[in-house]
Image 1 (cartoon, rainbow, N blue to C red):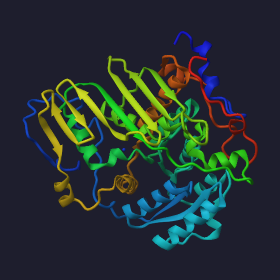
Image 2: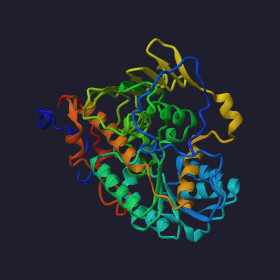
Image 3: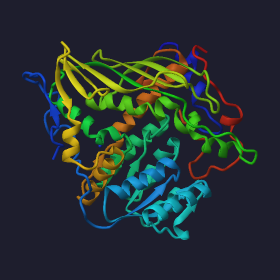
Image 4: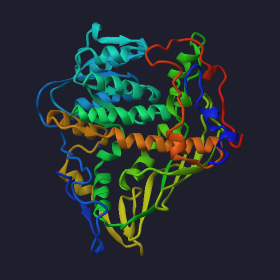
Length: 452
C-alpha cells in the first residue's frame, strides 16, 4: 500500500505497553442431479480426510495437562475425556487460582479426575510447570496472544499440543507458529487446533466433494459470523489493569486479536481450507465500534479479501445486540456452489447435486460433536505415532483475520506481505515474566480511526 506510512497502521493497533511490537467418512448424501465428469482440484492423498470414529483407538495411557482453565479450556478437557479411553488430566495451570480451583472441582466431580495440589500451578509461568510435569499432551486454551509461546515451549519439550483457535493475534505470533509447526513435524508430534469444522461430519464430506471437483474451480465466496455481543466483565475495584483485561480478555485486542480474529477465523479458515490452503494477497475493509461495553475492539467488520488468481472472498462479522444473526460459508465454483447454511451443493442452475444426509449419519454414528471428534483425531495420531500438523493452516487463517482487521483499522488496502513481515507484536513483555499491575493498553486504550 503506497500510503502505509502516512496511515501508520502499526501505531493504531500493535504497540501496546512495553511490547515490541486437521478411512474417510462414508458419503452420507442424497443426490437429486448428476454432477457429470468432475475434474479434481487435488488428487486423493494430496489433502487430508480425517477418520472420524465415535471413539479414539485404545492404546497406551496418556497424561494431559490443561493450560488455561476457563470455560473453553475446561470444556476441551471434558471433550478429550469423552473422545478417548485411557486419558487422564493430570495437571492444571492458569494465571488465576480461582480458575484452577473451578476446573479442578468440575473435573473431579463430573469426570473423576483426581488432580493433587502439587499438580496445580498458578502464575504467568504456570504453562511451563504444566508442560514440565510429565504430561504427554497439553491443551492450550489461554487467551490467544499467549498461545504461540506456550506452543513453542510444549514443542521444545516434545509434548503434543491441542491449540484452541485462533493461535495468534499478531505478526510476531504468526511467525512463531509457522516456525514451531515445522519443528513439531520434525519431532513427529501431533498438533490439532480448535478449528472444529475440520472434524465436523457435514463439512468434511462437503470438503472431499469439492476437492473431487463437484463445484469446479473455486472462483469466490462469502463467509459470515454475525451474532449478538459476547460476554464481558465489569472491572472490580481490586483488579489491576492486567487482571481486568485478562478476565475480560475477549474484549481486548491485545489478548483476543479482536473478534474478526478470535471468532470469525472459523469462517475464514473454512474458505482457505476448501480452497487448498491458499492465503489472500491483499485486503480492504471497513469496521466500526458502536456499542461495545468494555475493551478496545470494533463491533463489526466487512472485508474484501483478494487472492492471486483473481478470487475475491467477502468476509463479514458483527457482535451487536438487536441485529440479524448469520453464521456460515458459501463457496462459489465454475460448476456450482456449496453452502454450509443448508449443507448443500447446487449446480449453476440451482439443481441440488448433493445434500448431507443427517438421518443416515445419525444411523451410522453415535458421536457427532466436532468438539469431541477433533480430540478423537488428535489421540488417534498420538497413539498411532503419526505426526500431524493443523497449526500451519490455522496460522495462515489467523493471519488472514489479522490482515482484515488491520485493513479496517487502517482504512487502506493492505497486503499479506506487509502485515506478515511487520513488527506487530501485541505481547507487552516476555510471556512468563508479566505481572499484575498497570498496563498502558488498558490505561490508555487506542481505538483505531481509519485514515489517520
